[in-house]
View (cartoon, rainbow, N blue to C red):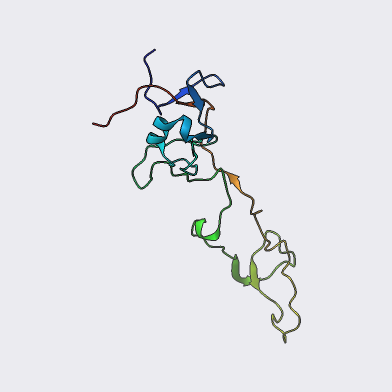
Amino acid sequence: MSEPFMGEIKITSFGFAPRGWALCNGQLLAISQNQALFSLLGTTYGGDGRVNFALPDLRGRVPIHFGGGFTLGERAGETAHTLIVSELPTHSHTLPATSAAATSTDPVGQSFAVSNNALYAEPTTPLPMDSRLISVAGGSQPHNNLMPFLTLNFCIALQGIFPSQN
């Protein structure tokens, strides 16, 4: 196997980091003991930049290439999401009605119809509408926001060839 570039990230199918590599789990490393790697990563993934710096943390994350509005080291997205009104598709709630005369007092499966009696009276204390006609729907619970995935191990090379720029 050829020597990796320092800072190179590889995906493995086993659950540990090989010698000379570390897990991409956001751990902090001392700058004094990893000066070359710090010169590549800086504080892009965290750390104070004086004493320590962080490795990338890919736990529960999908890596994407930087560019297109995303900067190197930027974290975004969410594993669960609760919809808000502005995210719902535009829609309407119709109220079935007919100009025919009423034939039932049971609202279930029926349309509003022309009453055989007067419909209105002087205002009094409002009463709730029959829950069989209209009710609150939904639970406002977050839903899973993950694409199908396979869990693998991401490791970063702590040692290797220092990459040069073209």
